[in-house]
Length: 264
Image (cartoon, rainbow, N blue to C red; front, side, top):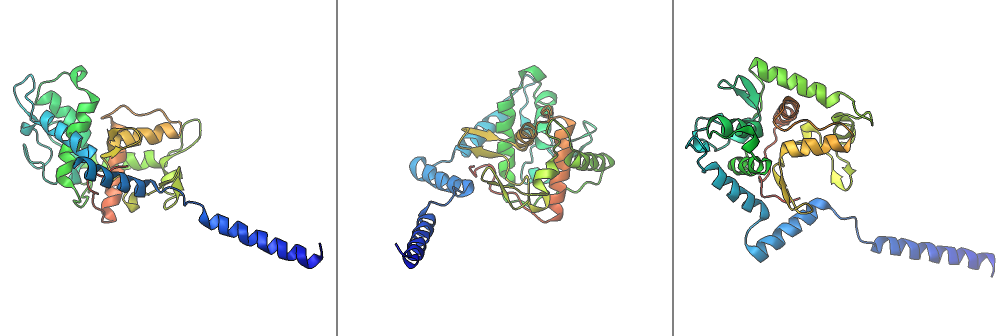
């Protein structure tokens, strides 16, 4: 075979390789796949899995505890029983407890103080469901976490410190992924910084786990992924990080997504 034939063969093979490459299926976009699954669920069952968790949360919200009261007697920041838009203002300082609380810790507090449950009687899945129910009243609401009270400012500063502090066996921090790689993908999932609205998609139902996850669940997952011991639920690190992240999202003018019905 002559030199010219070799060149022609090379060009043919290159063209074939390029054609084959362009015919390969594109990498699966998890968010597009979630939308597809969401639509399939709606068409098949007429309801989304997240809505079932919300309904469960509603039943728990209206359930009488040992005190004979329901969570309607709890003040989530806008007065007892008011739920419309409250998630958009949390975390915030609550005078009755003298501390800053996010929605999950506030639910945990009121299940004890209002409903009369003992801490060991409160199930994590129940807090998730109630959180989802309350959050559903803030779907697409503009995030409005603006630290003003001295304790809110202290939480914001602690959250910022936690965000940038490297720790654990991998010497990682939240900022290493969410600031440095913002706009890119990790394990096919898009990475966002607080200024890009990080935190505005939770609670959310995840198909691969068949479970509803809250913002505190997501924070723990991140800690586990980078080799740092997970904080206790409803603890100060969770509230501080949520305060910092959502205050930064507030500055950027973000709103919550369709909570908690969007599936991932």
